Image (cartoon, rainbow, N blue to C red):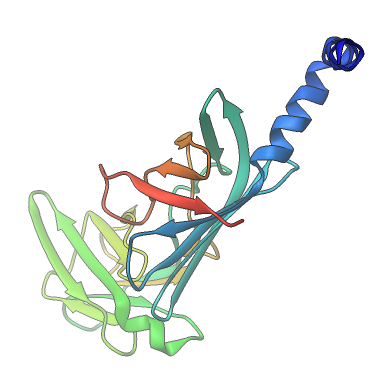
Length: 215
């Protein structure tokens, strides 16, 4: 028994910090699934190489994210790449003879077009319209200082565009490829024996959710 204890002590003393980190990473790595929320599938996979994968499924909506994770005591910290400034791109703007101001979204998937909310701002005046089945919304105002767009299936934030040429009354946009990507910025989860506890990036803020480890 004494000999076994000596061998164990020598092993611990000769283990490098990188070896210890590797052992810790291996023990924490695994798949953790959201519990207690009906009709929603969501989870976090911590890979042994310190990368992670996140998924969210609700009805026909699927979203995902990825990045790196690190352990600090009993916390797991998730970070993604920096989130791009906007989720839409302005393709073109011009002056057209029609009255009012037209904003349009174009995308090969026509089923997505009507899920975009547009708003135009002039001073303190803000007008809002939902896109029709062709991705188009027409406003009574013929000018705008700024235009904002939000994808209602991924309503994390608005993308705001300042209008450079006030004479233009037609604006055409498209989705950016990362429109459904989920981003993490130093998001911390408490690590317990069998789960992760912390926020969910797509559910109600201020609440603590449990992700149970898949055994």
